[in-house]
Image (cartoon, rainbow, N blue to C red):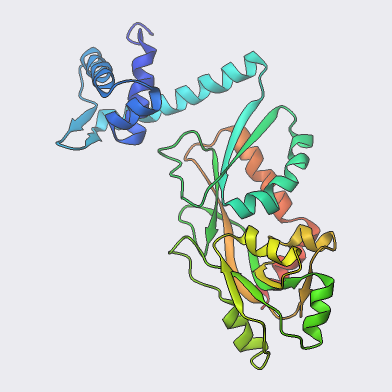
Length: 300
């Protein structure tokens, strides 16, 4: 039954090339030369008596036979990896991709609760503003994407934007004093702006503030507020911990603008541990505090 599978390394090379759609990409991932990848795949095609790729000038495309083998190879290699991790006794690693701010201010502070539930697992957080293609990059198990929509993803959390500051600065603002305002200027050009000017037009058109300053990271906006420099116009999700600790307070808490959502995206065939992580995320999103905020947002 297994006589035609004498070289499993060829299957591994083929799976990488099929997933990435590139012999060169597979070579880079596997630390081989493109020539070695091409040779391995030609040997596999010769062994099977079927073409797996349609080769064009600057691209390769899977044939019907190639697509069938790619699906089987992906599932088989995943099963083997899970078995090796289980037998070796090493903690299984889950790699999560999300934005810098969400990783630092929402996800990481909650991970201890995940480890208490699943001590045999380890989470690696890859924070970046660039989108990750889970079909092409198998190093990432779950992507938490920020925006109004995310194709193929499930909505996890909705946010609202408002003004936040230290207790001293909130008191100064309430007395009518002009204070600097800080907002995020997105690096991602696809994100629609939620400017503090929109909040001012709607809720405080006559307020003479102390000017508006922008940073390209929410972390910097929040840090400016924590340092007492002024008020931060930022997502309620990202300042949740600071508010709970009493470091920041909302200014006119009832005055807020709808923001975007965080969406959970997994691969086409998520393994059991990935499903467990996603279920835990949903539990965290539906904690009593989060649930009440979600309900308030949805009724507006």
